[in-house]
Length: 230
Image (cartoon, rainbow, N blue to C red; front, side, top):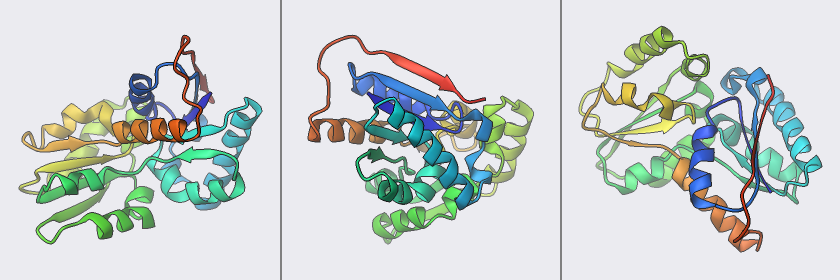
């Protein structure tokens, strides 16, 4: 069985891609809506929150956990791997590597403040950025929560504030699992830009880990259970 969690509906975009790639392993998706947004929590709070979710998954005999959240991944995955050495953790990071490999020249990365300011994002840029590339980091405070609550006017206001300042953007990296829900709104600012998110990469890595550990199931009907902590 596979465990997946996020601070609400964002991780469902990851779940959708995982269901395409993995057909038979059962899945529990834990929507931690009561603690949304993770981006507003400090490291100590997030470690406590994510540890409680992992403890829940362990009671359900889950050995593979997908952290379907960029913020929780960048701030907690190292801690969780050390605390739970017998659990396989799959993280979610902005698809900066993919955008760089496609040789885009002006890459705009959108994410929560915690994700944008994280060591992991800066490492991704340092490792993958080429000399002819510009990478712009934009922390969209409040956007994930506005999407979670379907606050359309707030979504529009935040996008206007953060998207109008750039020119010649040819690719956009969605560094939050909530953002694919408003992909069309984001695309309106840069219609010709290619948009990347992490969902396919996470699904691919999960499948690789299941195969590597001989726990990929190849028959039977998949059961998906969604638990909402609200």
